[in-house]
Image (cartoon, rainbow, N blue to C red):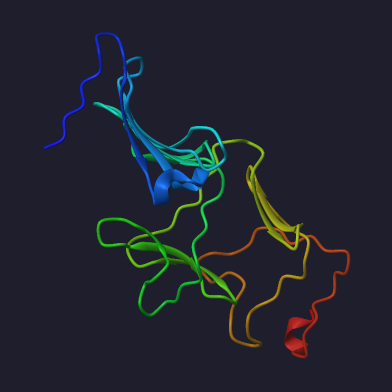
Length: 193
């Protein structure tokens, strides 16, 4: 066993130098910090000691990139600073997905061509508690906005297939339909009255 004990009020260090320590990138430091009571792994690649990993007793663990904290554990889970890059995935094997739920019921992924939000249990709720509403965009332009009791469209609204779907039903009818053109566009003469 190797035991290194710092003097009273001082930190403890272990220096590890590879390849005779003739390059800055060869030098590493293990530090038991007296002030923060943390265990820190540092590198000397840039010519000065920079933190790579910091572990805090009964607390978080932090990962650094070039001396800048990018990832840390918290009492609630984890925190990422910067962007989280996940390679392309697929729907068949579940690789490279963001998977949520005990049985991974909700999955988010990109397959290289398209993006997917897949749910296999229950209902997907999109909820905005702000009165500004919810907006769907395509290429930066809004095409649907739900605000209050209204839904606004900026594109032509039509069924997926012709002569297949109804607008309303015998038990769920629209109240008023407001249009500039009052004519009903249909080839059925009985509907033109």
